[in-house]
Length: 166
Image (cartoon, rainbow, N blue to C red; front, side, top):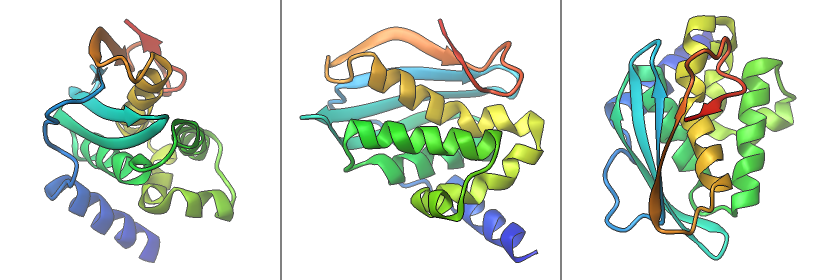
């Protein structure tokens, strides 16, 4: 019961008071993420300098899980090298798919509070949307300074993993 309360408190805090939900002045990369099954629609903006995520923000609308997950993700990856951010994304996806060790859970910090989402198949796409968008933006030349015009979607994606790029 304590874990569920912890989950609810963190989710509520990140949904009602997201630290990273705003528009950046000069992002170096922008990508849209869409989850049509729930109506989640985010635009992820990053500033990547010398291989490090210097800043990040998101804007958009969606359910509490998608918005809180995107905020927790940015809190975790800002200030980290791109390769480390991608490893954290892999760990988050593994947590949702099959479970992770206690050590891996600790690496995810507050994002680990979404661990029980794996038992709610209809919410998995919501939780992974920001993380999948992060992966696409970081592997699509994150320092190019332009919006690629592409978007990530969880449509036709039974578990939200793996995804598609449009």
